[in-house]
Image (cartoon, rainbow, N blue to C red; front, side, top):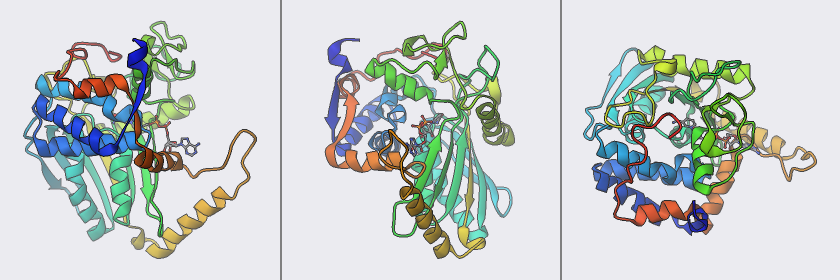
Length: 356
Ligand code: NAI
């Protein structure tokens, strides 16, 4: 990668949104769907979740062009009980499918106090935080998790089995932005490695292993990711796989489709939402107030040496969001050059292994 390609440029959210939308439309996506995907990716980049922002556009554009996404998905919500259901995504583009599912899910949680809803069959749906923030803004508490392709070595193993299977959580606060905490069950999301590649930066040796199962600092040599906290993260990713995959009758573990192997076929991925109306358990205002108190108490804890302050879990992304909203978003120049080019994609992902 040249020095020029490594450069970061600053771009305003609105401009980035238009560039992403235009590129996805040029790949064949309907404008309304492209608009929603762009909303999602810009939210991720604004929040500093660059692993799930504009860095993904070229891959999406290639998959859309090659037929691996249903362009006009016939989606429907199948209510299977008072508080349960499946939203069938027909393998539409993930961000659009999940966003369309949110309204019936939120409705169900408000009516019955609880909604446990699976999204069945979609392509990659990005950051959990985006959806959960909307859930919390509706006054609800939410948990969401999804499957991703097998890229992680099981604890003690050498071959990949589970995905980076993220879990996110959000809760409303009183008079403040909601709490949103969202993480991959690997030490880092695959997208962070992708981002390190696009920025040509080394990664810490604790993130991933190479083809021999040995720690690597070279993002280009990664052949397996490591779970958080050894066997505990390994257990968490299994829980996600069972709840967001097997529970919905979808492929599990190493049978989950690869992101890059075949861009002409659908991915059949699953995601699960567990949404709770706090007013069914306690006074909702007092609940939101109590979360405020928790945040205040955390903020008042004296920071350890080397730390400026104690943040509540997830706060870092909110702080970055506010800063980027004001000053613009730092994005690798190579990504902006691609977005501004006439090239729909550069045919670089299809047919590759998990670590294309
Ligand atoms: P991360 O490691 O950057 O952060 C994880 C969480 O820790 C965030 O909520 C962050 O705000 C919080 N955090 C970090 N430092 C903090 C601090 N000093 N104080 C308080 N809180 C702090 O995130 P990770 O694990 O790299 O995941 C990134 C994104 O990737 C997530 O949004 C996740 O949903 C997404 N993802 C999506 C996948 C998919 O297939 N759709 C697969 C894997 C991840």
